[in-house]
Image (cartoon, rainbow, N blue to C red; front, side):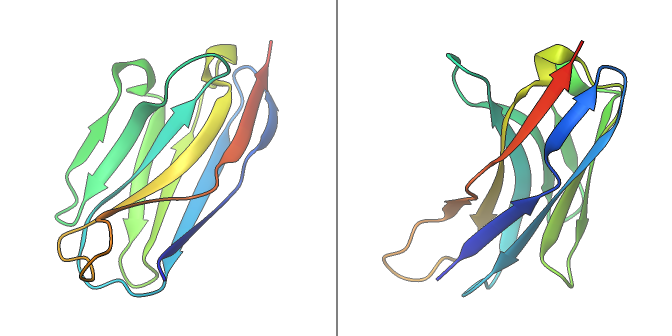
Length: 121
């Protein structure tokens, strides 16, 4: 019912920029947070940035000052602007959605399929 579709991944040189987009659709009532997580090869998935329904943001220390998360409530979308990219930013980036009131029997957390971001030195 609830689906998240990411776009914007790709290949960039170190120091370059890339923008990621995620659009949510389906039976969505009240969004608590939307955000981005990433998983590099051989590593666990980690938080990149989140934004709450009030607009409050949270960033991983590794991306502070370089990445900016934003949202469009009307479109139920979240964006991640990534600047000054580093090779260590290379990972699959996943969009995340957390709901205040999910449908009965449904999870409150949803994940996109992921989009690959590769930063070359």
